Amino acid sequence: MYIIREGKIEDLPRILELIKELAIYEKAPNEVINTVEQMQEDGFGNNPVFGFFVAINDQTQEIIGTSIYYYRYSTWKGKRLYLEDLIVTESERGNGAGKLLFDRTLQKTLEDNCSGMTWQVLDWNTPAINFYNKYGADLDEGWINCNLQAHQIRTILQMQ
Image 1 (cartoon, rainbow, N blue to C red):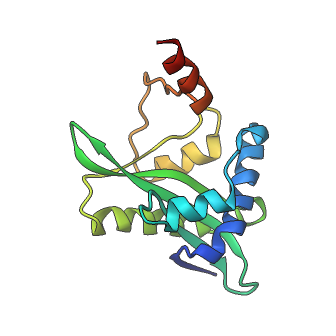
Image 2: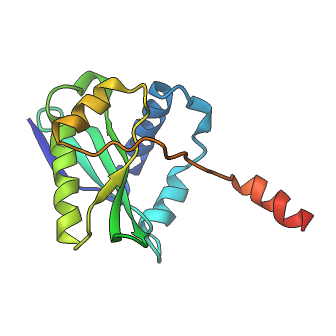
């Protein structure tokens, strides 16, 4: 059984471990540059930009999963909750923790008067796609993710 609660600052070292575990699963282990210190500032500083829930194994009292979210604004739909990551450590997958975290995040969407929740899933992550399909989620095709990293932005702005 699992306990779902809001994340606390002291949970961040374990959350970063889970993030790194997810990066390995997604074949991008070198992409994680975040730190506990940065997460402390970004989640608990003067202007928090994300929130999270944790799933705790009630027998071991270990954090085995997390749901990390923030708010975004859609010009078409208004305030949306964006689910950045839903992570359950590999040994606990398939036991219901992911569903509990996802359901709690859905509840947060309604509590905060959002028009809906948005997230992404890699097209090869069949277990995740199957999980989201059980909820009747709309999985969009045709959208391409676009990103510029800070070092690229600096270069671009210096060239102008």
